Amino acid sequence: MEDFNLQESIKGIWDKLGGWLDSLILNLPNFILAVLVFILFIIIAKYIGRIFERITRKHIKQDSIRLMVVKVIKAIVILIGFFIALGLLNLDKVLTSVLAGAGVVGLAIGLALQGTLNNTFSGLILSFLPELQIGDWVETNGFAGTVTEINLRNIVIKQSDNNYVVIPNAKIIEEPFKNFSRTPRSRIFVSCGVGYESDLEMVRDLTLQVIKDKFPQRGNEEVEFLYEGFGDSSINYVVRFWADVTKNRDIIGARHEAIIAIKKAYDEKGVNIPFPIRTLDFSKNQLSIKNKSD
Image 1: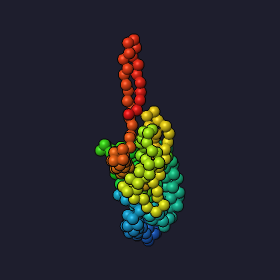
Image 2 (image 1 turned 180 degrees about the horizontal axis):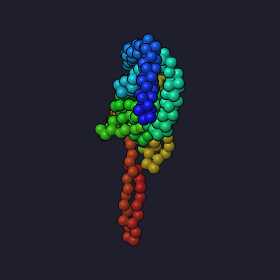
Image 3 (image 1 turned 45 degrees about the horizontal axis):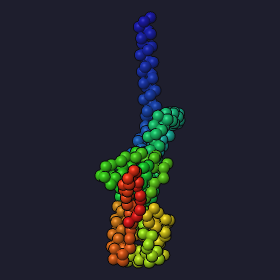
C-alpha cells in the first residue's frame, strides 16, 4: 500500500513537471520575444538617458540633480519594457499584482519619508528655477551668502564669514528669499546729517553732484536726495542712487565709496557733519549734564 502511494506521488510529480515542460515549450517563442523586448527597452533607456542628459545640462547646473533626473527617466522606460514583457508572457494577473503591490509599497514609503520626499521634490523645482542658481548671493531663512550647491535634499550657502549653512529645500520653497544676483544694478541708500547752520539747498546740490560724478546713472535712473527730519544735533537726509550690485559686498563697497566722496566734498566746502557732545557742568551744589552739538 505504501509502495503504491509512493509510485502515485512520483507519477504525479513527473506529470506536473511534464506539464510545465510542455507549457515552457509552447510559450518559448513568447518568452524569447519578451526577453528581447526587455533588452530592447534597456538599450532605448540608455540612449534616452543620454539625450535628456544633454538637454538638462543646459537648464540644470547641479550635477547631482541632473543625474537623478536622467536615472528616473531611464527607470521609467525600463519599467515600461518590463510590463510589456509580462504582457507578452500572458502574465496579466502577475502584472496586476505587481502594480497593486507597488502602489501599497509606494504609499507606505511615501508616508514614512514624507519630509525627505518633500525636500526631494522641492530640489527638483529649485533646479529649474532661474531665480536661484549656483553662484548667486541670496538672503533666506535669516542667512545670507553665496549658493555653492543645490542637491535633492538641501542647498548650501557660503556666508561672508566663510562658514557654510545647509538649508533644506522645502524651507527655500516655502519661505521668501532675496537674490541680489538676479539684477545687475540696485539702489543704494546712504544716510547722513548736516548742521543746523548749513545752507540746505547748497548741501543738496553738492551731494547730488558728488554722487552723480562718482556713480554715473543710466537710462531712467537718477540720484535722489531727501531730507528726513530734524535730529538732536543735525538735519538728517538720505541720498539714493543706482550702482552695479550683484552681492551684499557690492552694496557695502558702493556705500563706502559714497561716504568717502561726500565727506571729502563737505570738508572742501566747510559743511559741518555734527556729532553729539556731552558737557559736564560742575556747580557748587549739583552736577548737571548738558547736550549740545558741535
